[in-house]
Image (cartoon, rainbow, N blue to C red):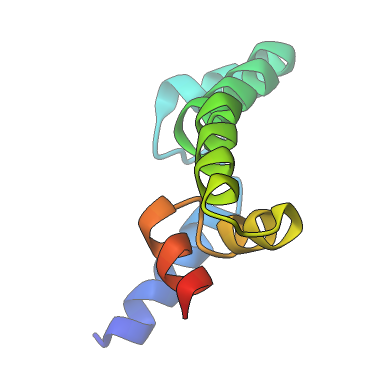
Length: 94
């Protein structure tokens, strides 16, 4: 098995819902029986694990603006590098 094949297989597993043959029984049961709770849980998990908190993001923006970079450029750069401050600073300085 090649790395490419493994990644394609993983992508297929993650992109197709199979609640009758789940990876996680609790989540599948919630999806099938209590969709409102399922949606609330997915929103919460997305905010907790897949997003940068706004206060943290704003702090990073402010630090870069204080260094003299234009706000619009700072925002665009932070978005491009996944809100990683050091990477954004290097990119802005280059």
